[in-house]
Length: 397
Figure 1: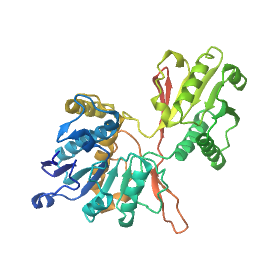
Figure 2: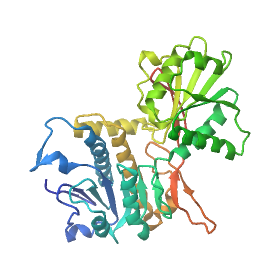
Figure 3: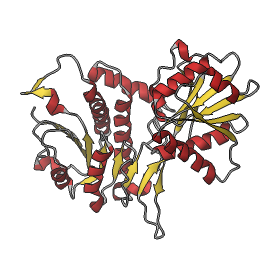
Figure 4: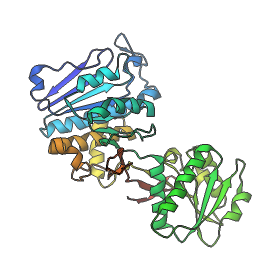
């Protein structure tokens, strides 16, 4: 495929695909190309095309979906920025392109890029990008948590919090909303589960408020209603805190509790991966389920989301998924902020005047004795309560 170059008044939007690593911007366009926003997305376009011909007919393989959705969200945001008359240049780079090279990419944006937005596929991909940018201190916004242990980069912003932060906010939510209920910390087997339980217990230990009182049990692989019944109270609301990312365990637990719903009122509090469970199925009926997410697409701005969805459908003949709305929101919000404040962008990163759907608030992580930060992490998490597959409540951060 050839490079596609979209030039509009005040906005240069460059899509880098196939054999092209860096767009060659005409000198006339560069006069209006400040600031530069570099957006990194794993699009896999080289693997999807042979001699400029799409290989999959009318189908889109699953491995392409997230990147393409994020890209289309970015594209709609770019069009809106252009319609507002903002002078900005956005370059989108396919990190899975055959000739993508992180060193060459870094060299191409050096001295130009005001911010970098990335939606990496893995923690190691994020670390590669961060390692290239850290010496220059270019502000980097990441859609992935900092699971690679990146540090010493105070302009590195994590939008999607780590599981430790999630567990801390989960504990605070329980303190505010369920302190008088029958609390049960129920941990399945596994090293990841042990680590997650440790995060929850650390949040309890570090809380300045009166600690929650809970009963703590393991959850065996072959648990049944007979195992769970003695842990529950028929006269109280039962809140089961289950630190696991494994949705199969979550599904089995909710299914077993559904069979006990006539005797026990149960709410299961889980992890972010539980968002994907189809709780509308009959076997999950009657059990409340909480999970946390930093992204609640229509939060406080339903009309804007509906307008975005119409634009997305007109462009793709499909409804937007989560990654589409995230590409749209992050690009629109933080490019507007960049244009408004320029070199002072980082001092205004928590300003709310350009909020789209969600509240994001970045807090420093790893502050040392000379006030240096390792990175910044968004600590705003929404807790979604679903019953029978329907959202019944949203606890805002």
